Image 1 (cartoon, rainbow, N blue to C red):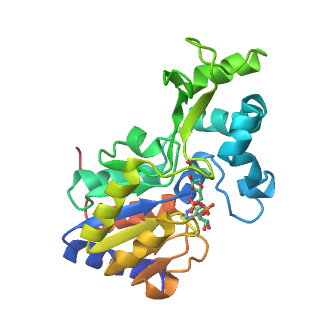
Image 2: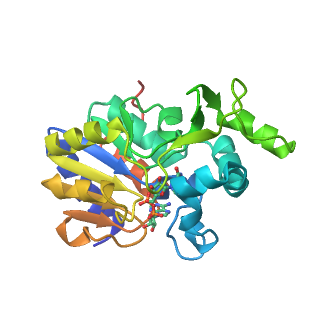
Image 3: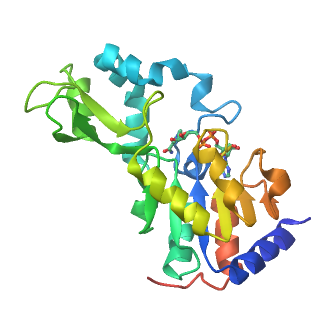
Length: 250
Ligand code: NAD
């Protein structure tokens, strides 16, 4: 099926749905210059060992942990939302999308204007002191680290952990809310996720009408009504145009 036919079919399903929820992953932000984890050749896991991103590795040596994440922190700080993020914000503004569940930690959905965003893996914008619970701006902490200072709490000197969910940690309350959204929806649009990270990767199983926009394959492709293996930043504006929302302002 051609891209045009697939976009028209996806638009038809979205028009007929009563409650559409979007689930995004790192793939929606690659066109903003942030690499994902699993794309062959460019994914972060080709260079980094996932074992370095556990809660134990953070607690064992926070300074070494920050040195590992500094390049990603810098990329996220400088990244801007792309046409994919903006299109999803337009879809929400028009009422066609009710919520965005995201595994991303980059804050780009909010920067694009999405309002109901459930960050199920936390956010890389802030960090919390594990001793006194003071909140810190991670970008400022990164500056301190680059100057050779300790990435420590200014109030008590404790270790400041980024507000992201590391391997070995429980998911935040946002995950329960996201699960409720997934149970409520009659249509789920997955964008830029390999759907390999549990338990978030299980959420599409609740949806009657599943649409997937992802460059690579996912374990749910056979269950989806539409699968488009093209860049999200190109496909989502086409979908918005097909729905007649390109000039929608909110
Ligand atoms: P993943 O790396 O497992 O999968 C990304 C998927 O996106 C791949 O299947 C790839 O083919 C596809 N993709 C890449 N670029 C695309 C594009 N332009 N358009 C459409 N599809 C594209 O990522 P995941 O499923 O999100 O799960 C892994 C974890 O990655 C999450 O826990 C998330 O927290 C973390 N992560 C987040 C960021 C970020 O916040 N931007 C960056 C890296 C990793």
